[in-house]
Length: 255
Image 1: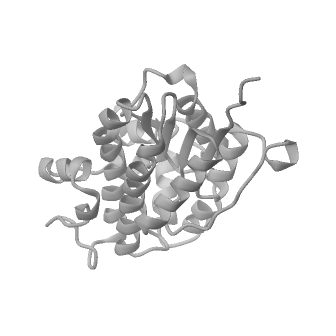
Image 2 (image 1 turned 30 degrees about the horizontal axis):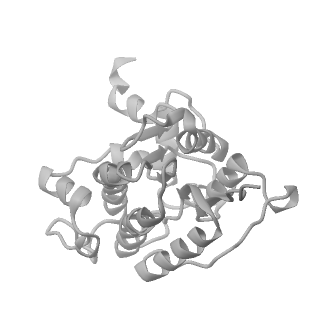
Image 3 (image 1 turned 180 degrees about the vertical axis):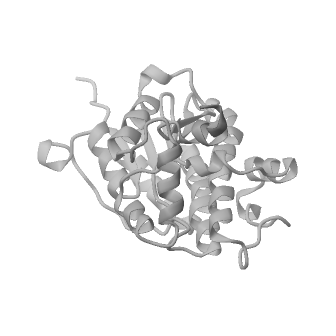
């Protein structure tokens, strides 16, 4: 009898969005799946590599969903650059060696990455710089950048990093994409809505075509599509799941 290939789903970050995605892609322990929980400092590349090895030892990695991140309302610019930008680059690079034909990596970015204009030099750097030099650029100020600006830059960096990694992943028969949510009803977003940036977030919702908060399930549905075989010709791309916020903001005077 042929050995049964054990498929592995890795979800990094277990907040409201990460848990919803995990449930969308696979039922959990109570429904018969084996679940392992690991603490991870995503800024520590060696720790991410250790997780990669442990996941690879469990079986064939089917999908990696990277949801871990911080937001400007509760984090400094340094934390945002290190966790959101470098942390994502760590995941993309660390999981490449264990990717195999059919593996799909989906990184959670943000619509904020679609709302910022960066120089061509910085965009090239974010897409292609060596991982250990990613935070070393004249336009990246870890100490005095505005956290909101740092967040937009980091999330644009996520989108660009996915583009830059697509060919390397393709050589393994694997894919890498990102999903950029709008304002999603998670515990983190609720704290932001109650904080100093709440008015800005509410104005984004009002500008959107859907005129509502998104739900974790809205994002999970897009992630499930990218993780599955129905999207096997899609790689190096970003899906914007924002209820039409970016388009509403751009063309607000047209209606």
